[in-house]
Length: 379
Image (tube, rainbow, N blue to C red; front, side):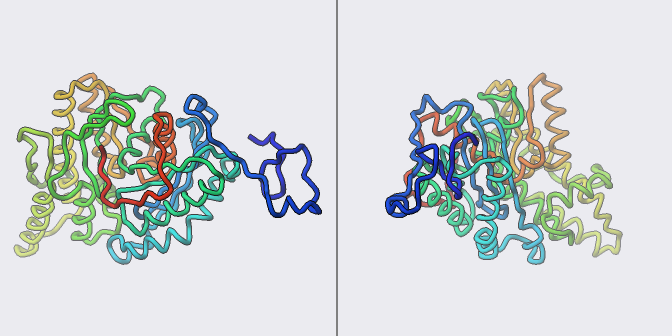
């Protein structure tokens, strides 16, 4: 990576020694590294810079060969949005503008790479907040254009699938994936790279959205998911029997709006009666209901598609109850389950770069005039 002669800016030189600055051609026609690798040359040494700015994490990563993480820098805006109790889109976009360039520089530094070592640049194209998406996509396109390397627009939901492949050598397609986060709850039959069939989804709130709404009602800090998970370890999950909506119905869709309402009604009933509200017990009981619903639907889908392995991914995959519950259910049926480490459960650029590498190997790149899509669907 570092054995190519370079000028003071890190650009590779075509000659063993730098040409004299007296040569006008040096100033008017700088040498450009053009990389247009044929698909068959995308081997384990290729480097992809990934950029993720879909919501409230600013991230950049360098991934080698689609599987080896050389760097993965993530800056969370959790504290920034905490005082509002949720994400403010305009605030998020401005924070990405301020953080992204330094984050990219840090990712390259940690990877011991320069821009001119890169073979492609990828960014999340959607879904997400349109202002946030625009920041990452614009920067990725600019870098790709200057370097004359491919730009790859990545679907954020598809990228989450690759977070499992990055850290588990045995992980591979086909697999049944539960993609569960603040904005999405999907059960996906991932047949192969780029071939996905959505077999179940939420008909109202996503699981992570329900966690945040319940946490806000209980007066907990944002983001709500980690707070409820923390308190649930101190409470009794059997204290309140909250409803498990649609858990026994046919099909693989889920619903969390009614569960959220049930929590609110229960707390108000206690307050009206002058009874103590034990937040730890309510958090534990609510979380257990979410786990029971999602495990039941996921395992039903496993049987339906005859899956041999399960991927758990997305922000809510960091939840200890869900990791344990789904892991136990898979183990009881002899099904292999993989879940990423905490760093790769949240939105991150390493999964974007890994997904982009797989896309390029399928012959897919993205035009520089492609626009971000906040409602991009997984297809």
